[in-house]
Picture 1 (cartoon, rainbow, N blue to C red):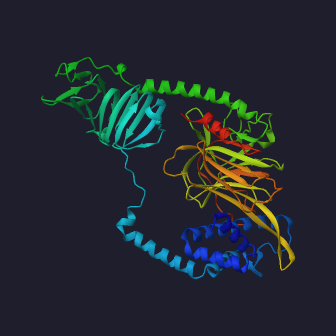
Picture 2: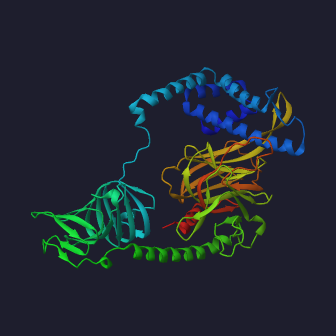
Picture 3: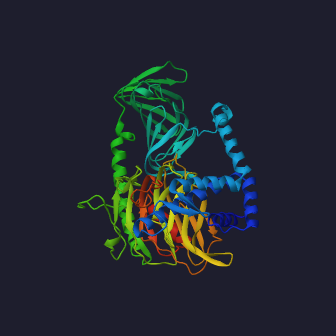
Length: 550
């Protein structure tokens, strides 16, 4: 069964319009597929959440019947808790034996996971030996790229230019500048094949080994440099002492200020070690500061054309002016200026963004959010694009941007617990039953990408979605590349989208006294642009290229 057909059947079942034949088809599909059963439960939960909020909000504001704390479902009136129970009961009735069997099976699986070593092996594991802790304009061969926070596996690492700091899991740190080549052997050992490196070894990492052609250096708690040129090696000790082993000679202790050449001397030389000839923390920091200062200037210049795009609805660059009095204000940088669409940060804190001189908002607690109001204009489509760093997928749905309620044409953009980007837009539909016109029902158009976001990497990613309300097509992008494209079977012509009051990083204001599903985003958001039209693929790619962190 196609995805669109399945969702259509579920939607019809939820609004009570599913025919007997379609009901049999849906039940057959659910009995055959665990993935379908999981999706069925997700869709029902989403529907229940949306009904809870939209109708509670209407009831609390308008005061119309039905009573504020009850609703009719399938001809029976339930309280809010009863409504949730009715959903659960209905699930069992429709899915019948299939769901019941699955539920019991899963309980059994949960017990077996605790005691089965083979299943335990499915737990996420780390096989790396070091972390890229800092970069400055680093270039690697063959299109390889790394970002700060990336774990490195044992193997060859070649730096063409720029600067790189590696933190080994043992606690040792290696600083590399300009061309160099190393073999990462383990958390306790590396081999320098070419270039200059500086090694800092704090007490927990004493015993860290650095190999070089014709030489082995074992650190005793110190800072030292190793140089390899044309296959000849030397070690230079700047602080503390090391054990140095040359082939065919006894171990030598090399102390502060001394150096040893592997080929020419075979005996250490005092007073020759000079840290100025090797990568240093001070020079690395200065180089890094200058690089990112220039990058910020270039980025700000390049964003001028983005800000002046007449299709922009909102442009949040998460940039604070130094004289800004209130740090809760998040400016809308669209040109011409639209102060009414400035955002208000609630709970979220200003932190370092994609690079050191760029700021971002950090969303952590369930109440953190950025409130915006994008007006009530109606559009033929939209594009949403943001730079995000996910620190955890804590919720079933983790908010990127959601309109407050569930009004006609209101968009919701989220990441589900499995790392799938999810875009949805809600429309009302008039349905008929037994030839009689019934009340309008909501019909969701829901679009999923494949799983593309992992919570473990903490890497910055550019995510985007475009939606064409005229064709019903939604396209998801990750880092400038298309990852999914779909046309909803629920699409009907003549529809529009509208934003109204929205939130970035959370979902709406809870109506007083009504429980609200928690959808807060866990991580950092740096740059969020919103358009009134679907962008072309090359425009999304351009947005990504303009903001690449390094």
